[in-house]
Length: 221
Image (tube, rainbow, N blue to C red; front, side, top):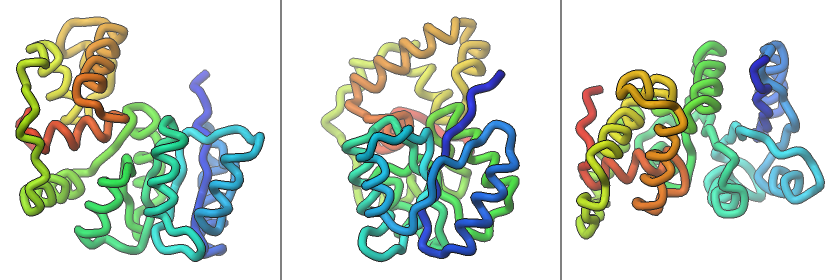
C-alpha cells in the first residue's frame, strides 16, 4: 500500500478552501489534515502536538501572516515540509519570490483538479515540481538579477554526481535516475545527499535553483 500524503490547506477564501479540501478527500492516497485561513493559524497548528503534514498548499495573499512570510518560517523551522504555492497571482515576480523563499511548486487557481493532484504526487515523489513555464521564469529571474554564485568550484562535484544532478533538474524520480545510470536507488540517494551537502542546499528544489544559478546543468525543456 502506498503511503498516504498528508496535506494542510492554507487560504482565506473559505469556499475555495472547502472545495479543494473536498476534492482532495476523495483521492485515495491523500489525507487533508487541517485547514487554516492565514499563516498564523498554520504556524500555531504546527507548533502544537499535532501530526505534521508532508505538503502545505499555500495561498499568497492572506491577513495577519501572508504566504510568503509563512513559507520563510516553515522553511527554517520545518524544512521537511514541502510548500506548494496555489494562488491567483501568476506574475513572474510572485513566482520568482515564492521559489526564492522555498516553495517547491507553484500553481495558479485556474489550474484543473487533475493538475493539482499531479503536482501533489510529483512533489511527494520527487521533492519538487516545476512546470516548464516556472523553470523558464527561474532561469530568467537568475539572469535578470545576476544571482550567480561564481565562486563555487564545480570540481568538488564528481562526474557521477553531475550526471545525477542533470537528471534531477530534468525532474526524474530516484527510480528513473537509477535506471538511466544503471545504479541502485540507494546509490542515487547517496549522490543526491552529497550534492545537497556540497551545494549547501536545504532541499531538492534549492538544489535545482543552485544548479541553474551556477550553470552546472543544461536544461532541454
